[in-house]
Picture: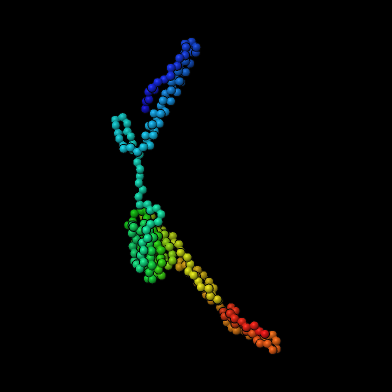
Length: 236
């Protein structure tokens, strides 16, 4: 790029005041400053023009390259629609399930086939609100390294597809309630079904008579069921 200065300030140094080489150096220095000051606005306008997308053109002396923008497709941001499959016992996922919540709800077991013919990125959410166990099986590949995955009642599942295999994360909606019963204790918890196990511990079940406190008094009693005191009559 060549920019011709529109003007240069005249430099007038009388002959004999300084050496001729010094005089030339001063004049060249001042001319260079003038050239730089005039080039800056022209360069700025050309730099600004490069930031504006233009069509690609070519001439015999210069080429202007367009600034391109790449569009990203098939990306689901946030949650998607709700696909309610209540009462369905066999279902195959579809492209439209991408980012969607698929609800299963049936008393019988539900078989879900994970369709491999989907466009990536692809994932979906599954919720089992029925008593029947939901089994998810890929058409090809594995899910979490296994042939299938199961979803118990009250559980929420997120499934991701990488093009070859599926990966999931199971989230329980909450454990089942246990009714408080005297003599019954919680002995375990099943994470697969979100249920507690309870049992009644072994213990003495009998009624014991307690001695009266005075000659004219009356005997008392203490009743135990499985080792727990369930009733008593004080002695007098």
